[in-house]
Image 1 (tube, each protein chain N blue to C red):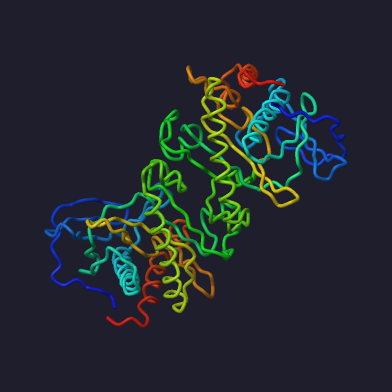
Image 2 (image 1 turned 30 degrees about the horizontal axis):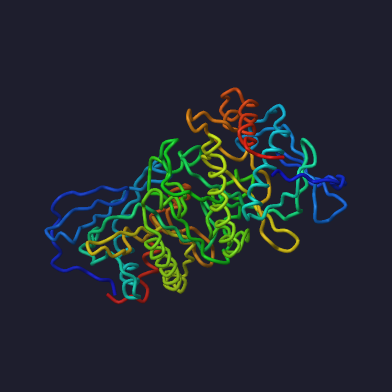
Length: 247
Length: 247
């Protein structure tokens, strides 16, 4: 079920280093090689640290989610895992908008609209944030995106619709595994054919997972809020996702 | 052209005091009497002061704008001026959303999306803010409004459409009078028939006006940013609006 990439093209030129990953070109202009790091940051980079083996866990966790979403009709950049810390993905131009879907109130939403953390939302909340460290990744709306030329209304329609479908699929995947999907962040990109596909990663760095029974955070909030047992949480999520998977 | 209300019903019970106005019931359950104060606040009430005769100027300025908009097919709460500081309006239940339309980058938009103040926008930007002093009037999007039950998608459609039409009408009114309409805030309410109509006020408290030639601020930014000549700016806007009006 988890796609692996055999005879993966070697990494050639270093292309880009993000907070949690490095990206390298390969000899295939359509493919890049992504290396998952252990670096962790929070609060727009103001808090920095390392989570032991996070890169290993998140590479595999993302591979599981991307494979599952592909199997369910969501086009993603994922082409297959190469080794513990690397995957091959389709090369895309990233749309400079972070798409957030929320099922339960947590984090910045509690501050913004004044509902208590843990409030279950009657409808999923869909938010767009402008990817800009300088500006602190501000919430933006459709007219801001139009003015900044970040996405056309048609692209936005596609992205919003995909994000909500992905939410439904992910909830269906993680709930039987004892995880509540509180909220998560997605990024989309355009491939060489101009198709919009899911990109970036899906892991406890980008999703809030709470234990369904105890409500315990099993995600980056443990790092953000100094809750301890950070590594254990990442491993625990992966362990639960592996249940019932073949290959 | 400016509607006056003859034989206006007397103020009966005090109903509500906002930052710039007081509202009183009348013997007619459909009508309220609004008194415009000289009090000025900024930055969520952190800055407070008085602008001499602001109440007089804003009562008349709002009367001019509301009369003009009504004449052009926009339903408003305005029923007519009573005296220097008071008007009669239809009683409405205010929708707890501030609607902002922007033609030029200024204020919080510059901080949010990183474009310089004064940048002319290719399209008007439409924003919704949650009316909550406690939360600092945060920017919200359609899904927040749905979750908070502030407005239905149909109501939002009506409000957004009206706000953009009002923007076009207002630009057409103030530009020949040497004023650039940079941005403005509107509030809407529902009357007893359930109709959504324009409410609140339209004045240099709620609009940014720049002199078309010099770019000089002629609005509350003079108070917010301690630019001096505050009273003069409010009077100057009213003086220009009166040009060519009869009655």
